[in-house]
Amino acid sequence: MGTHTLDERSREVLKSLIQDHIATGAPVGSESLSQRLARSLSSATIRNILADLERKGYLSQPHTSAGRVPTDEGYRFYVDGLMDPTRLKPNDAAAIRSGLRARDASTNEVMENASHILSYLSKNVAFVLASDIARVAFRRIDLVKLPHPRILVVMVSQSGLVTNKVIEVEEDMTPEDLKACENYLNQNFAGTSLEAIRLKILELMRQEKALYDTLLKNVVRVGERAFSPDARGGSVYLDGTAHILDQPEFEDVARMRRLFQTFEEKGRLVQILNACISGPGLRVIIGHENPEPGMHDLALVAVSPADGDGGWALGVMGSMRMEYPRVVALVDQVARELSQALTEMRA
Image (tube, rainbow, N blue to C red; front, side, top):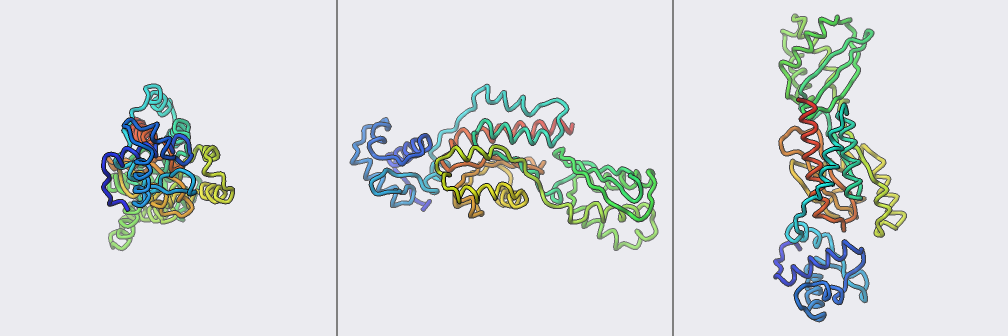
């Protein structure tokens, strides 16, 4: 499957059937296709084309007397070569722009707004994924003295995400000590990921100079705690899970329970989404293409920034019969506006 070439008639029939099924959720028969198609094709001719598309793996027939529905492979062919690109309505584009340019909103609030807007406009489950902070490049690190032995470490990523961590050090470091340490970290490690910073700190610990240089000793003391592996993970802003309840294909209670359990286990969901979004750009993942068996009934449209500012990705999850052209346009537009909003916030 997936290597077949289809003639123009077969492509037209497949496209029409998928559009009809997306709109109704019901199996599509030759009679309704005959009425829908612009060109004049008899029901018998359409039945032959449908049978051929089924043999090639693009369609399946739930019941012998019923019409046909697209398979994962059928949707993939549609997304890759049949669907017509669509432009968002001006009011949708305006709603996205205004929703992500809220005054005085924090980075986390902007990301939460993005997931809400995307869910509302797509009528599907939307997510914004803040990546594993250990792999995110940082723009600035601030050190704030708290009552001994605690120090507040504030890490600001290139995309504007702010992560706070309280560490403890045995030595009572003065505000001046912390400022010198902070300056060293920012001058030497700006634009570096936490993971890379930690490796450099470990390397610094092995250097004899660090035993005698007070500044380097402080850098090592703070760094080995601030950039330890427990600063790993990631977070996800999820919105619109109730939209799944509106889809007739999710009426199976056991299947619904498994799906909602996946949504509720945020740590596991972050891992699944990270596995799906392996690189920059927009991706459409359909059914069994998803590495998570519990999500084989879903389609996912997701995007990660191509400019490397990293730290986030966003997308939509829903029924495989989602309106792909509109959802792709929505995901792309929200990603553009979110990227612009984050850029302005860190300017």
